[in-house]
Amino acid sequence: MTVSKARVSVPAVAKRGEIIEIKTLIRHTMETGYRVDSVGRQIPRRIVTAMKVTYAGVEIFAMDFTQGVAANPFVAFHTRAEESGELVFTWTDSDGAVETVTKTITVTG
Amino acid sequence: MIRALGILALLMMAAVPAGAEPLPSGTAFLGDEMRARQSDDAANPGMLWVADGAALWRAKAGAADKSCADCHQEAARSMRGVATRYPAVDAASGKLLNLEGRINRCRSDHQKAEPFAYETDELLALTAFVARQSKGLPMNVATDGAARPFYEQGRAFFYRRRGQLNLACAHCHVENAGRRLRGNVISHGLPVGYPAYRLTWQTMGSLHRRLRSCSFGLRATRHPHGSDDYLALELYLAKRAEGVAVETPAIRP
Image (cartoon, rainbow over all chains, first blue to last red; front, top):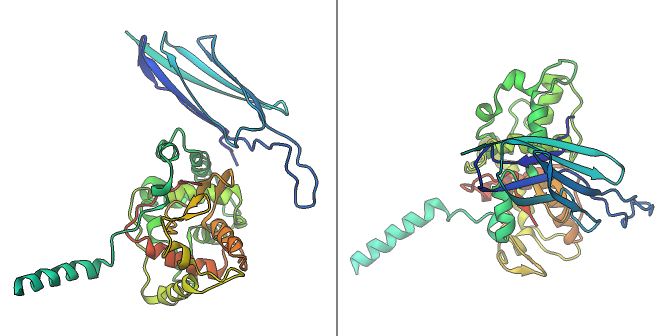
């Protein structure tokens, strides 16, 4: 099955200087490492450790995660639409898995 | 006096056939923030499963090498309103099937594929995707004809005391709905948001998983997913929710 790992919402078009909201949702168990399974073995920690967003090559958002963050983290933030270009969203997890999503925004005016 | 009686009679006539106003769904008891997340497709975590369901809908499976879309084409049209009519009695087998059961029946009969196990991400995704096509449409299950005995069975289950706590569903979800059970507000027990993303689970889950949680809380027997008891109860709950809009994928606490 193709598992949809991340959903990102970026307005396709914005006016120059406009404040836009960006919403991201990443599918991840965020296993804390504190839980045990049905026979008492510790379930190893596996969490998203970092998220980074670049806009036209410039880093505009970065966040570190801890085991205190719930599963399937939802992160939303605002930025200013400066120029047309690509937004690249990157999540890295504690096992080294990397998930990347690219969105294009067109800035008018 | 006569006019007053006439008005009273009119009021009673208006009140009786409709039964009652549709009950509020679990969404009414969510906080503002969670309600906003539920209604925003970009923020609702259940949409991750719906997106997977959309992919499964188009994926060929089984010995027949057919996808759901090969027979049903666009789900937005062919599956619209389907979830409002389930659970329903399957004419061929005479069994009561919920959406999960219908999907698995389709898999084994038409796709010649292994049915999905209950509570797998695949079955949750496909069920959520199909139910999603009915979002906003009012529940409207049939409880007459072949469905009648199942409805009666579900109704009996709803009102029967069970478990060490010796409570029936009705004791909480009818008599105390809207009041608090420790930290939570008791809902009316309407199934319209399932499969739902439950914060307690930190994942998507089926209605039967929710029913098992309820049974656990009562210290009663937890019936297996897809069992006859829970299917009949699901039909009764769906009938209680008549006229209430489908909300899948809902967020629940």
